[in-house]
Image (cartoon, rainbow, N blue to C red):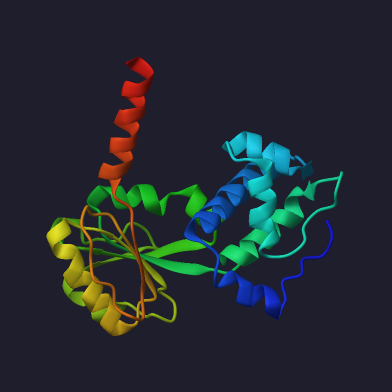
Amino acid sequence: MSGNNHNEKGKLKTEKISDSTIRRLSIYFRTLNRMEKQDIKRTTSMELAEIEGISPVMVRKDLSFFGTFGCRGVGYDVQSLKMELAKILGLSRGWGLVIIGGGRFRNVLINSQILKENNLVIKKVFETDPELVKNSDDQVKVFPMDQLEAQINPAEDHIAIIALPPPEVQAVIDRLGKIGMKAVLYMASRSVKAPDNMVVMNQDISIKLGMMTYKVLEKTG
């Protein structure tokens, strides 16, 4: 793989990158991770495109925003390209995650191998139900919601995942914004007002389910 021209010019260019491009880069990273586990050494834009249902031209265009990767006629070194994408996506460094709510679902996230592989580490959980306020293990501490401000340290707790009923989400985001939380992913079917100092994204399962049921009807008639 040839060197990556990820210089100052490249950094300025990334400011204009679309969300859809970043989403595809995450998909490429996931695919390269699988390839590396299968001991595949090299790949091409054609192979990446076929696996994920994306055109080879789109793959090459997405990568070109961030530098020059691979060699014409030879393709990409899987491990090297994966490492470069990890740097671009911020996955080459560690991120502290905080789970707020979620009940027993928190155990799925805590034990997620994908999170661990992407340097996303869950160390704190906050619950509204007193019955759920107990430690899962030595690594993950569980606190009541009224200790949110006292226990979160934005220097090491970077991202919050909120899994609370929709009416409760905005108030929690406001509290997190005041203590300097950098980013929030919330799972609720409503819009929220994001503090200026925070990146806020929504994962609405109802939208995904609507897409899924449409595709089922499309296939079955």
